[in-house]
Amino acid sequence: MLPQLPRLSDYDVSPLNGFLPDEIPLDILPDVYYQPWEAVVRDFQALILAKRLRRIVDALPILDTDLLLTEAEWRRAYSILGFIAHGYIWGGDRPADVSSTCITT
Image (cartoon, rainbow, N blue to C red; front, side, top):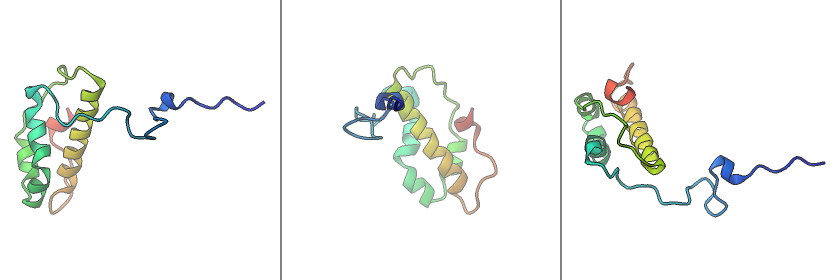
């Protein structure tokens, strides 16, 4: 007897979109509390090209995640922080040995 095939939904795979979500991801976190993260992502390319990303990220406040209310908001925050961390480590003349506490706390 053949084993039962896994359900796509168990792996967040859409039968219509594959690994892309069924719902369109958020363009911005709705709570203004997260504006510091959104501002960095909005100017991300310019900050990297000007080699200012690390300085800007080091000045960010440590934000709490208590105001992230939906899975879509958590996914957006995760993506934002992932990009910021990657840019922080690799966006300078040399890779950073550690990342800023505001994105790893």
